[in-house]
Image 1: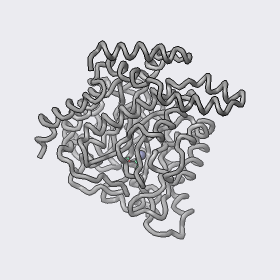
Image 2: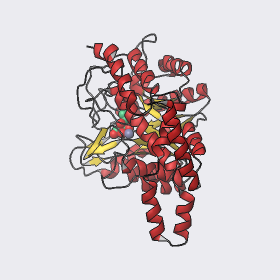
Image 3: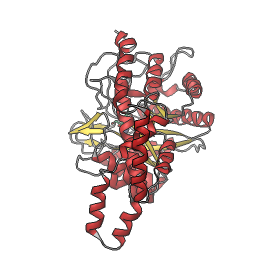
Image 4: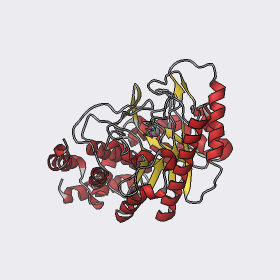
Length: 419
Ligand code: RNT
Ligand code: ZN
């Protein structure tokens, strides 16, 4: 699209918004500061680098076999840089413990991991001006089974407690080096396929493990705990349910991660934001798109994501909500998946930032229900897309659908050659 046209459209949009008392420049400034935490695992279908040919376990599935998945750390890094070159703004990268770099350190098991196994990642992140977040990995390991931190076998439980403790130490080192806390997300797959008659027992074990894991206090990392409804092969019972982690987080001042695919499909995740903000220190999001189940489809600009973004802005909580992405679609171009999902999340945030909130709240306070609904409806078709195009232009990334060609070119030159 021609630069002049984008600028012209933006000037008109700016005036249209100004008439409603909205400052488009201020909205773009706020959007510029929001760093998404990009999940490293879309690039390689959650395989990691311990045993890339191993099976993905833990009740999660990356379906599809589109060619071009990243097979090595270099390939993954190149793909991330390609994706971020097409996404406006500066973003973070979220690594899983299973993405350790053993090339110069020798292999270490999960209960032996140390910051040195992520040294090259930390260097690479620094060189590319990218901050890191981290995740413990309970799945895809010979000791995963169906229970890790909640395992009644003391040896297995000890192994995973040690793993998770080490992940906190690694996140601490990442945070210290980057001068900004690294988020450590703990999600474990623990659950059972069929009914259990010992629900309390496993939950008590998980609580005990977490208490042990959190004994050490750190300054440069933040702990998050992620709940889930069910997993494939663990349909009847999930030890770390939402009630469990919400209770644990509220009691112990831990951040609760809301993965938008981890609830009943008609449950509003947006509605949880204002409650969590009152009882837990901050919020971590895993933005995803569940289709019928926790299918981890690529995020799009749908009502769920829009509602979530609007709630964050309406609660004035952009500084207390960390926005991570969590989806893995192996059936389409993976770089494209990053770009679509990240840009969709940003588009939702921009629309939230452009909402005529003051007027809407005046209507509400005056009990003017019709006026509030009318303005909510009309604000859907305000020219936010002209502001979005301007935001992309100023950030030096492709405007509109023109990124499709960039991704096709990268596919032709790079990913299609990975056979
Ligand atoms: C699984 C959780 C978890 C994972 C990643 C890979 O259902 O959402 O966050 O997707 O850790
Ligand atoms: Zn998640």
